[in-house]
Image (cartoon, rainbow, N blue to C red; front, side, top):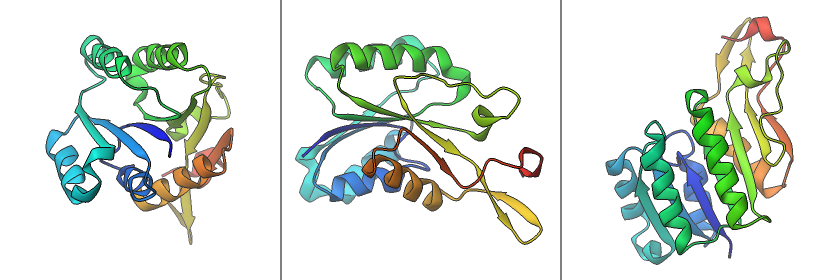
Length: 178
């Protein structure tokens, strides 16, 4: 049984949270929406001892990181899955350092939007992390963004196969993004 931390595990990554809960891991989910967190925990009442929920918003960096420090006083995680928007890059960087300081063997999976894979400015966000890039899907003559189910399935695949870098959907050609 692994201890898993999921940041943003009630929206597009809800099925990832459910996958790890159903696989009998200890799962801590941090998200902004308390009612979604409670709904998820109530869905798995029989496993409530292995589910911890925390309502926190990384947009408030100071309070969010205080929550993380408090959480890590009594928890050590094997895997962390981060879905943090680019406006909070500073918070994400600090979070990664905090997690590695607590456990240098932790596997951190950083879910990134397609802009991180732009061919003109491809940046390796943090070489300590496993990177999951969200692309798009081509259908007939059009393109569309990925569905939550596609994102969750790809994320689960990347984590269970311990892939250092994984693209869900496609990221090129860049000009065909929706």
